[in-house]
Length: 386
Ligand SMILES: NC(=O)c1ccc[n+]([C@@H]2O[C@H](COP(=O)([O-])OP(=O)(O)OC[C@H]3O[C@@H](n4cnc5c(N)ncnc54)[C@H](OP(=O)(O)O)[C@@H]3O)[C@@H](O)[C@H]2O)c1
Image 1 (cartoon, rainbow, N blue to C red):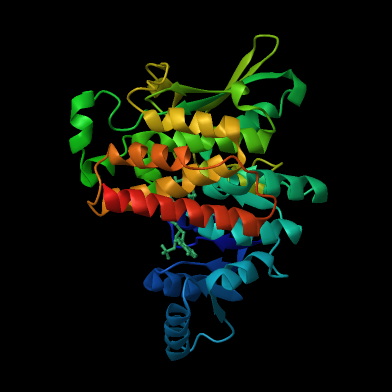
Image 2 (cartoon, rainbow, N blue to C red):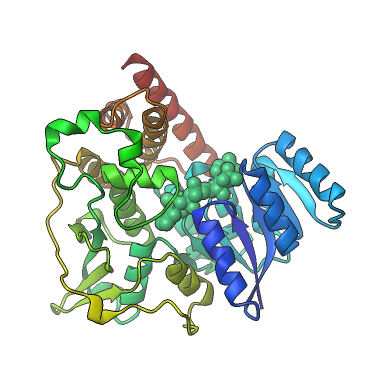
């Protein structure tokens, strides 16, 4: 029985993870749950799963949840809060495996603490790998702690890499759906609304990643994530637009062979893979090969999606530029969703923040968070001035 700490339990990945636990009660149980602000979902989960600990984003939310649990006579569940709370969930002595699925750098300290506590990680939280991947992977390598990717593309790459040696990899091909604006005339981009951008053609996900998919910044974050997870330079990672989202990614080997991973577009499959690795439990997540009519692959359009170009540039520089890319995007996406800036304002804000970012390579999580704060302040100032 693997006992899970689920960070970001109330989100899209968190809930899919719990549905896997529901399907495989003999394999997985819940040790701890970390939520943000969704108190109703956190209460429902606590009632259903009876974890040892539940964390909420703030003290106020934690004491409210505590009150509700007391009224419902659900004893024995400790309620904690904030960063210390997520760290407590991630490092709990009854947790054997940590699912890192908080959105943004809010999940960074807990993911780092889990690695230091020798807990294997199922990693969905790509932003923490972008901001602090060098530190996280070094700590994991030193302790022999596995980081198993949940992001479907990296999960696919992980599966393809199992058949060849690291030195035999020529190129990692990350597939991208191209998002909802792959064919939209460029002059209409300035007027794209949040409602339009929140309609992803193939995946149902949280708000930030959905907007990031529409700008293709998400693919850029994934390029950086791939470099760090698989220890390859940016020149070995390429993006191909594959609108069907059926091939989740490919690995080209030096002899010319290309291996691809194909499955349903359902995040429960990469989650199950990460939880069960190196085993493959039988599941109902089957893919009907007969329904497959075409597989299209196109070069990405860097003019249409400047965020992708910015991400490749940041990947080359590493360190503070990757941190700034992620932080500026988080601020810009929030401003776009609130109607404060246009869709094109997202790449504009990121580009301005990156231009003002000096080259640096933070060596500790505290330094990463300081650089993240600086980039956020820069981005807020640009957003306010636009
Ligand atoms: N969804 C996908 O299909 C998908 C695929 C690949 C990778 N990912 C990655 O997985 C991560 C999660 O994505 P998602 O789509 O599941 O996002 P989501 O639905 O927006 O969920 C985010 C989770 O993070 C929690 N959270 C936010 N701020 C927090 C804080 N300060 N402290 C503690 N918890 C906090 C939220 O809690 P509340 O809801 O309670 O506020 C929620 O549980 C992201 O890094 C994303 O890039 C997602």
